[in-house]
Image (cartoon, rainbow over all chains, first blue to last red; front, side, top):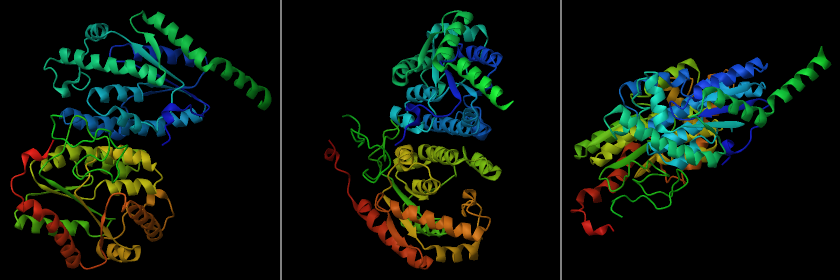
Length: 237
Length: 259
């Protein structure tokens, strides 16, 4: 069986993804990365985990009633992902754009395995995914992420805290236990899928500097794009 | 080994006929070990309009009269997913992958919440369609067959799979006589043309080939569905009866039988 997630894609565009647990700061970093890339003149499209309209109703119903099992949770997220991949991710890649994904299949690998779903099954499930050009993993100790979430007065959500697993009735305790296990899963994924680890304890600016260096070096985007732009201008206009 | 589960040490790569009836086809659901349940899972498969529901109704009646507890389950009937699937179908926003995945989600929901609990409690579960319809529909739409079998590796291998076999010509007559041709059952999403009759014939022909190609792999009991309702029902009852009777008459299970 063809596994797209382990083979480089052939689209002219670039796919960069950020991964990490809640409170790792990955969304902040992705936002800054998008700003920079746009300012450099790239066309950028951002897509978020679990954001397609298609499965919104079912996810909402399921979450409200706490009716999702680990399997339906996993499959609903895969459905959302398939929908976004085909409508939101692949078209911009074909058009030569930069796609930034806030969470990717690795989130499913880490969370679903923690919930007790078969690891290999989830990997096969997502084998239709496009392999990112760079996957950044924001590694953070659980206490730092909890402090950040608390400082922002973010209420821990039922599933994000892994409360469906019934490990603890305290959302905070449950969050620490669940996300702690998710961190262990991520550690395995780093080697398995060649993710770039960013130390997410550091300052926002320091992290962003690392991120930009990694992206520039891995994709050589600025050079390629500027060159391409010049050629087009010279020849057609 | 403390668990009564018969889960194989090295799991199969995906859904295939090598699995034991009542066990998972493939990798299964690790947090839900199964095996040794008293209930029986019987799937009635066949294409659209072949007469599955009628046969299930009659079979249920008969089984209940005989004293069996019966639970029915059908494709896309989970409370979690039905509204979403209906919406997606009507708004035409499905692509072939999301199509497959929505149905798989629906199936997972029913499997965990209806089928497994019912098998545990000793019911005969009659499934109106099973994963084979999903495999056939997706196969016709060009979805990778091995990926599909891996995906459905969490399904339970039924104790019996009846496949109601029919030819397209007879099927067309039956469908037109009853309720007419439907957009999805005609595979209009595959854009074979605007003519629903031609599309129905082409699509159903392909579907029937897909089903036929699975018959050996998944041990279908092929039933000739061109016959009358009663004749078909007789055959189903004969086979189901022969399968369930020994179970019914069996004395207390021997506890030492399992290692």
